[in-house]
Length: 56
Image 1: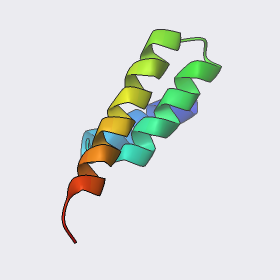
Image 2 (image 1 turned 180 degrees about the vertical axis):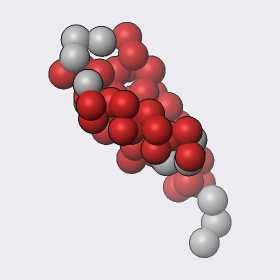
Image 3 (image 1 turned 90 degrees about the horizontal axis):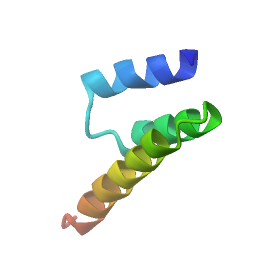
Image 4 (image 1 turned 60 degrees about the horizontal axis):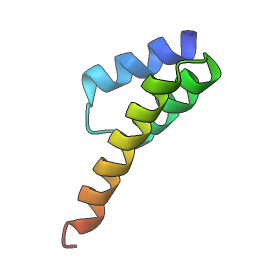
């Protein structure tokens, strides 16, 4: 739960941090919060897709 709070804080500073969303999803999964975990994983993937689509 401490990790989840730290990651939530990190996301309040940088909501487009795909790694933090992914890690928060893992933390939620460990806490048994399956729906929240899936939401964070989807958000992480969407952000990664956007970042990968940007031209160099």
